[in-house]
Image 1 (cartoon, one colour):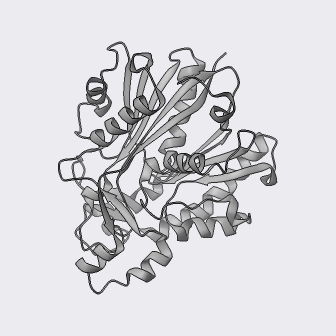
Image 2 (tube, rainbow, N blue to C red; image 1 turned 30 degrees about the horizontal axis):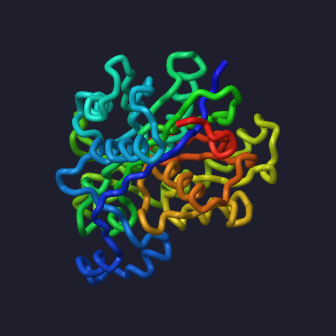
Length: 339
């Protein structure tokens, strides 16, 4: 049997950078220093008005092909995770297949998940490879949340940035991704939702929680999301490590979805591990939703702080409410799996 392994990753961020100084210029009453101390975010990349998730995703893929010598004809499946698709239909992955020049006998699939999406996607890739359906999967995450955010929205504009990542997932003889665990609690769905381009009026769902303060098409109840995370993720970690016959001390890094500094810092303190084992690297791109984990992995690889022998936890959580985690070793560094 073959197993999924995380190969090279390429990241693409939009050209335009919005700084905290830009936010202050637009909103002089905002205390951006106080906001930054809580979010840990100082810069965000913003997609151009005519730039969509597929555009970011395609650029990340082309970068992956070029920098790592990946033969596009070797791709068996394109898996695209986004909550900001180009259209309600057709599937954005179909548009990307054509633009990337992938084979017409290549599978292409969108799935709608946000902050937990990368881990969910890895589990889908693992299933496709274990079943023999695919040997090489182009797993793409891309979001343009900023298109949903009003310029006066202090809650959202300070946090979210746009971006994409392309990960090559390929078959290997040994398992390096294991012990997947998932969670879903739809009772929290109205704590983060987009209110346009669907077929249900979502105003009632929002009004049932809080008064809308800004004109964004995206609504978020930040405190509720923090409470959900602190309440659900520690037990998820215990379940994963117990099933893997590991202790928390056996884990190299806790690679969490990069939400905000405040959320990650509270989570780190709750699970009582050293801050160095919970990387927080969102200063210059903000919360890029489904792309935060592959961007984080790419940053860790570039810094050379992660060894192939380390057993790490990959954990995503947020919109849905949805959460997921797994044990992951970066065998690509050790084996040099051919791209």
